[in-house]
Amino acid sequence: MRKFIKISFLLAMFAFVAMNAQAQKFGFIDSDALLAEMPKVKQARANLEVLQKQLQTKGQNMVNEFQTKYQELEQKRQQGVITQKDLEAEAKKLEKKQLEIQQYEQEMMKQLSEREQKELKPILDEVTAAIQAVAKENGYQYIFEKKTLLYFDSAMDVSSLVRSKLNM
Image (cartoon, rainbow, N blue to C red):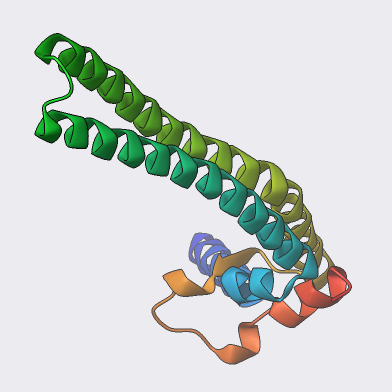
């Protein structure tokens, strides 16, 4: 009798494990391709490009002004129409201007990064919610990012389901 109970218990365990193994459903998505197709992402990227061009123009104007002042100072030095004391004072001003340009470049990168996060966060949240909804509606336990997979069956691609959830 004990042997029968042990065998029955083992068979039940194997059946349970086999059912769980078969019940698990996996999917994957290429989020880069999906994001590239989204009109909201395209608009956000266009907005970022406009801001980047504005900031770069301002930075280039600062560089041009610096170069002009440097050339004028170098010309005065070569012509001998500036004293050593004035030359040193002007050189310090140029060093300060160069430091301002470097600080501006750092601030520009920070501003672009913050703006990108601000523009893309709601879109990424929307995509994440759509992926979660697709997983729940279709019984997926796991949805992976395609670029991290070494092998995948294209039948497990849930990108089209997520696109339809995002009304694309």
